[in-house]
Length: 81
Image 1 (cartoon, rainbow, N blue to C red):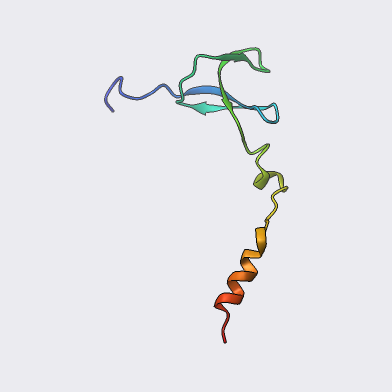
Image 2: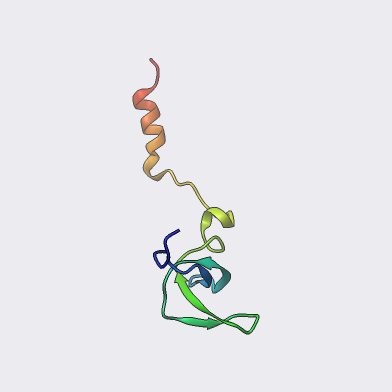
């Protein structure tokens, strides 16, 4: 590997702004904000709008909507005759 061409891979805290959930992981993303974590150490902070803690797919609150009966309209139009 060539020296000094790779970004620094370090521990960072990702904070979900919609549910106030945070988790510690490793990343190369750059940020200027920091936060004090549960272990007493200070880590870079990345703020995200949505994570697995608040996304409807992962929370089981996802709803499938058929707005205006589009599926039925499609089936009627292209049904076998």
